[in-house]
Image 1: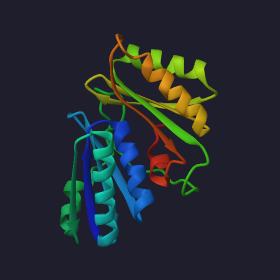
Image 2: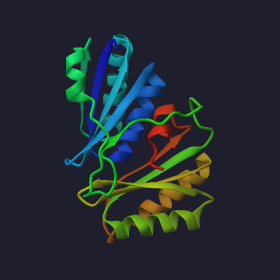
Image 3: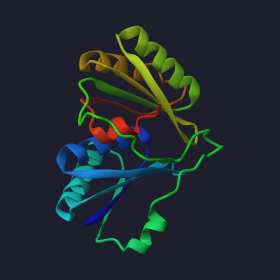
Length: 200
């Protein structure tokens, strides 16, 4: 490993959008993500130092465009002894009923031919109403849901870009009064790392 990048961002769906931008901008490899109580996500990437710096700049630009705070930091030539601190072992968090450490699973494709939509809310009722509306609006499929703690939940859908965009727009409009909309994003042709980290 030439360099390690640590990207901390609030929200699982913005983290996937940022990861997608970093992978499409630079040759980096996702090592793992780790959820914390902020609620937020720490994305850990490795690669050549120039690529890792380029990915960190892409993360900052993408987060700025999303109006989401982000912390990026690059460690050149990390000490092998430090790996025990930053590379978290697999775990299971009983509070959110899932692992808080995610390692990418192997995927054959560098990018998908479909789009992924993410609707993140604070509150289950809002998430479930949003996804019901999304499914009634367009031909999309629910892939998974991801809980982050603090009542944050993301529903992940897939389909063609136009259908996913229509579904996400309709779903996020239904959240008001039922909970808080944290984020709603569409990722056309998601990157390899995003595909590998999608909850099963």
